[in-house]
Amino acid sequence: MVTRKYKWFGLATFFMLMLLTLSACGNETALTKQNQYDQVKSSNQMIWGVKADTRLFGLMNIKTGKIEGFDVDMAKEITKRIDPKAKPVFVQVTSQTRIPLLKNGNIQAIIATMTGTPERAKIVDFSVPYFNAGQSLLVVKGSKIKNVQDLNHKGVTVLGTVGSNSVINIKKVAPQARVLQLQDYAQALTALKSGQGDALTTDNGILYGMSEQNPTTRVVGGTFTKEPYSVVIDKRQTKLKTAINKAIEAIHKDGTYDRLVEKWFSNVPGFNWRTLLND
Ligand code: GLU
Image 1: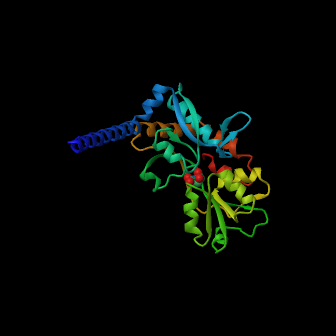
Image 2: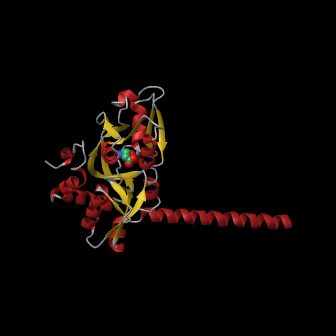
Image 3: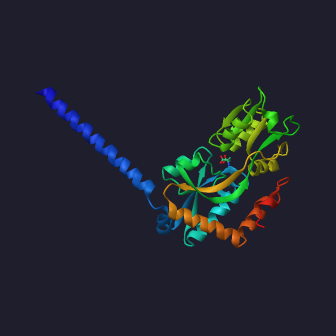
């Protein structure tokens, strides 16, 4: 008798747990399926994931406590055009955390030096590209590394950041080199300056942002990939994606894009910023 009672108790508990799990999954689907465009409109805010350690694109200004950069300005301009009443809200992301934060609903869009790649397109959606970058190298002045071919040797260490496309690309272009992945770009730069690697690899704009502030380093070898940056949204957010694309088009048409390119890149030594301007 007793054992039977326990058996029923066990079964009931099992079904209760199953029900709870199912309803939790249901909630999660509802949350991620929510129409983010309508959310922006009704909440009067748009929640963006931006870098906070990447000079020129998204960098925390410790004096003001605000994140500043080209990506941040683009986010402000896009938000304004989607809904003039909406305020952009900024959440810090790294190359590694940006997709998980989007997928679990903490942010509504990513604008964080992010390349639209076919691999990523399996899980997220991309706007039209808004910035043309390309992968390059940063070395300490006096380094023997002059280009990406110089990295393709045993005993060479290349520094990069977890979750970046750059660490995937470099393994293809210089398969002999060891790739050391740091948590973010601030740590990768520190590692380069303290001699833990022979070169740091990521996109040219990011590297020029570093070299400008760190005169002992320089960008070498030109670009060896194409990295078109897009705004990233979750799958099935067609309304939001259309609105973002329309906003980017308007930003180009009314001269805002060129103004922002000039604001952020025209004083960066060595950076060929004029090629970014509209014709
Ligand atoms: N654009 C590359 C990427 O999307 C490198 C820059 C980054 O780590 O954000 O991964």
